[in-house]
Image (cartoon, rainbow, N blue to C red; front, side, top):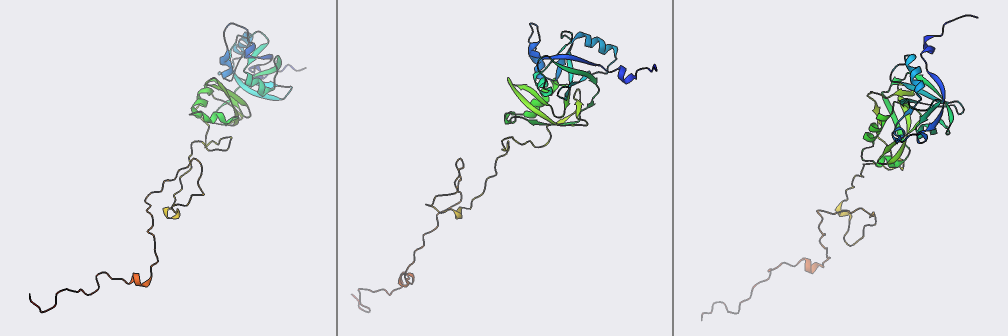
Length: 264
């Protein structure tokens, strides 16, 4: 009835549905396992044409929604080489969205704030056994375009997959991590098995006088050796009677075989 123009905010928004598949289903001779190591998807060429006409802000970031399960996440785009009507996602992303192969996913363009802080929780204590887990995480995040609070991301290190839950992101629940100075893995981490990593118990000093020779140490713990230094055996005390204790050496009078006053 009224011919109102469409608001510019809606004109510049990309929104469409695709059938999604994991990267392992991508046809072609080239191995695309690199897609599994990050947080970016592969879209069809028609998406690039539509995005260029909409004058979308770079970097291109998208919100993915599974309307059947009301699950959503955010991602970037790696290439536009998928078949029409299809997009390819990393396997961990499909798990977060509870999507099966060939399921429908809603793809919408979004603008996200740049991240300043993120907090992760390893899903296995094996990740904390890495020599420098923070450096490994920071290097792996270079393959990601954004983070969403609540997601469980997967990173590959030394041919092993490690899963980490995104516990918190600032300044928003979904943030862009492209060319940002983000404080990740802040604070002292705790092992999932309850042990403290890299912290040795401080040795307890033992007074040598408290340990008697010839008596075993019943507080001994396996794997701990205690060296007793500056300890000498105590002198043995002997109770002596009064006659012995009152003895004074060389206290008697001397006797001579010669008679006094007699000359030879």
